[in-house]
Length: 418
Ligand code: RNT
Ligand code: ZN
Image (cartoon, rainbow, N blue to C red; front, side, top):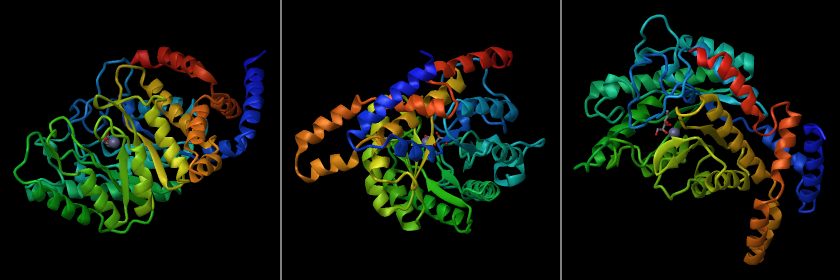
């Protein structure tokens, strides 16, 4: 039997098994096809960027490892991304940071303009990718003491306010040019290593700074703010906490970003989604994997990921939840890191889309929690992967781990030459 026949045969059997539960696999696949995951450009070069590639990463985040072949230029990064996209079923977005600008001369962060991202725009247009954007409020001399938008020095604060204003305009430019709004996500590393005497002042400064940043109406840009519990060097206090940004996002009607690595190690973001969607129109996810801390490991098909996907699907919120990835592993092939994490995220969404929600809801409404549990457990081992393989086949991307053959070939031809 050829692999194609195996996949087709397994799919027909799986489709019948799901049909018996009242689930139409084609409907699930059509829903999955509409989900564009935002691939984070920074996995391709360990969050280096092209402003000052040798400058080092700061802000309490770290990419560990020294796997050969990291992208050194925007062209290399785009080529690497093209390989990753070619291994993913469906059409996906790009999540870009401000330090990935292209310019012959040094451009200050508060002076970045859309023209510095024109090559990214052309490439995105050609590849059919929407683009999301991020101001880079780290890896810079003016962020060196751990504060940016909530810095007590008005001049430093002003610099970062201007950088964020410039970033929103670039987001708007991408949104307008590509015909799909950009989410511009503000994350700042601000916080204290040790217990502060005054937890309020930096938060009031951040509030004022954000209000200044958001003052301009930009129709093709969506704004998001990303909270965090702690970082390296901000273990005791982070200005932009969950409570601060949740209240801010609700009061300003903007998006809140939930990064799965940003909470207590046993705390999952899955349960936060339904609550936030009551108060917010849209949210952004940074799908990541913390191991013991916010270590940004490659997303694996674990319980956490499945719970996140289930919640988005159960809330019927695929159109209100923007899904981006956020991890940086420099210890393995970086294209494999993108591909594995994105395919897992898609697979988790598919598995959630294949659940008989009506049946689960009915058991619950009837108070039949035994049947609810029995069905939930059965669903874990239903043949979702046969549907996934079929989806890959029908989208002409590698089935199973055959995507590694493509990556290995590219590694030999291109990455090892860098
Ligand atoms: C840091 C945040 C933030 C960054 C990226 C590079 O803890 O998760 O999203 O990872 O902006
Ligand atoms: Zn994040």
